[in-house]
Length: 517
Image 1 (cartoon, rainbow, N blue to C red):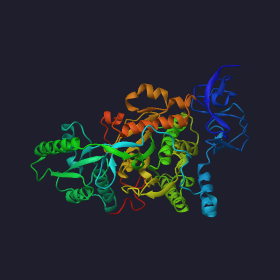
Image 2: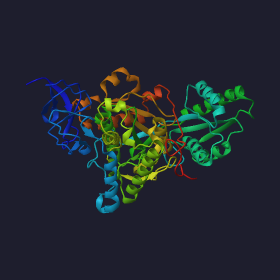
Image 3: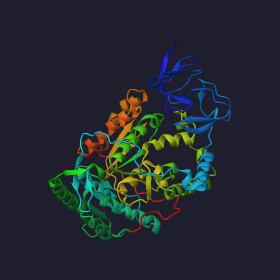
Image 4: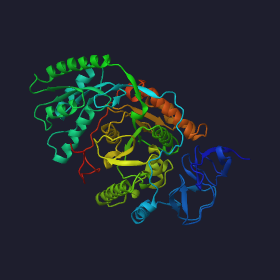
């Protein structure tokens, strides 16, 4: 028998397998878990697909157990499968799914809120240690944060934060002269940061002539029992004095926050979300499904999940026909917006050249890998940025602009997520001002080179050394450790990003952008 190289079968029904390492012509792509191998007819780069069996012209190419494209010509067992012989039919698949839901209604889908996992796993603990809040929620951190209410006070806010140990400082691009729809979301972003359960207290910093009313923001934050203070550069003595006063105020809040004791809190009150950014060929095969499995664990124990749904999401993930139809509408408007502005459907410009070089051939293939980050929990409701989910279960934020990493993570923070499980194959240090970011990668090279970024390494899943389920439970236990006080890498790096989403598309608004008070 010839040389064996590691390959992965994602789903038992797939007619392609994925090369986990470079495979030369004549070498065997071997899947150890099922003891199956395919001899490569040509060089196959790691991350790329190999035909598991013959695929006739016009037949579907199947990965993740789903059609991801069509064969442009006859593809033989052992052939490299990529855009030279695979056709992207993403728009057609979306249209077919839309018609199926619209015409079939409830008969076309299975709606349920039952957890995907049938048994609760045995965990190391039943509670986590948190800080009780006046509104009934709890925090896993006791951050004191500084919020600049206008671009003109950004520098002072950052200097105050640095003077108090490089604590989170939220700064903004403008927050002045904004039209009503955009300013409504800016205002909500300020409030959502201040009322976040991981926040103990807030210092609001203004110039004095900005659009936001500091007292209005402070009053809304105070309703949640937070300690909140205000300083104004124009009326409190200028920038130097405001920085001095700000440091004094913040240090006082830090002292009082340190005196607050942690108490046992139920895991069911923990609010989590998953996100995939800076992805590569390993993401959809390892890190994303591991995060999805961890969220499935959280779902079966009765927790709260809030993820992004900017492009609508798969209707099959909906817990009701109403939600499925809303997902379709969000997706339709997003795709129409892209086409109207660029003249091209999204699949004509996505996957990116970098994605394709890594082995992703079609947008459907890319989306399926990305969607693994959300697990299997059915979405009970689509919420708007700044809206807090009403109870246990899975929710999705309506945010088309959320494909930008900082915007997307911030929308989860605005919903009150305690943690974001952030997968990245290429590496991304991004954190958040009010919500720790738990970094997961499935790329062994990235992990070795950028260990300061990562809290969990999912690379063993690629080589079949660990199952997705084993890794998912291991990651969930890591999450519980972080909830109990273990710092994430993004916290150690003091990455306090917080980018308030200003629109409902990349290039402008096409609907009411935020929650109303």
